[in-house]
Image (cartoon, rainbow over all chains, first blue to last red):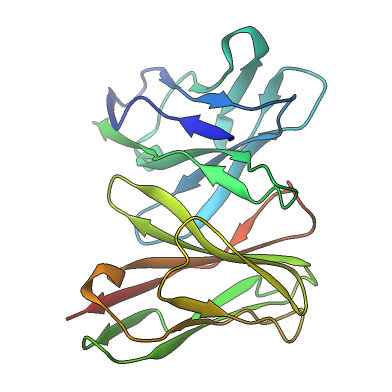
Length: 114
Length: 112
């Protein structure tokens, strides 16, 4: 079955520092991959997606992610974090069985220190 | 466009009560889903629909019912609320399978 692992429950960074959030997936074929962000008290919003082609994808708010097939990873990066980036981040991959409804990782909570 | 609208935003129930969480989308999306979010558990799929009249179970369907009579609406019914159903519930829609999901703002439910 398809699955997504986000190894880090919490990540703390200082404002202005770089950021990398990890995501590993299990999928039988080349997957569609997504990163979503959830601000406190809000629903989820798409940050970026990988469907095919260039393995480095750009998203909103200055985020990017790189698909590495050999490592089954799709890590999210940002070169300089802003205080407003404090949020919960979710990696997702379509499930199996034909519906392809996304399966989400457990999320990584980003804490930004001033 | 309003996108995905969920009502109510907050609800408190007593054990054994029933209620319906409403979800409506105005994007003409075929796919709609209900998730619950619990601390440390991420989002878990409750039920989903791939079009009007077609629904199926997700990972955690017990205690919940759904129906899809129109493309726009996908209500989630709690038949007999239990404290274990205390959670934040999100509705989402997408244009097609495997595509981007658009989420509502959520319903925070407490069952006492």
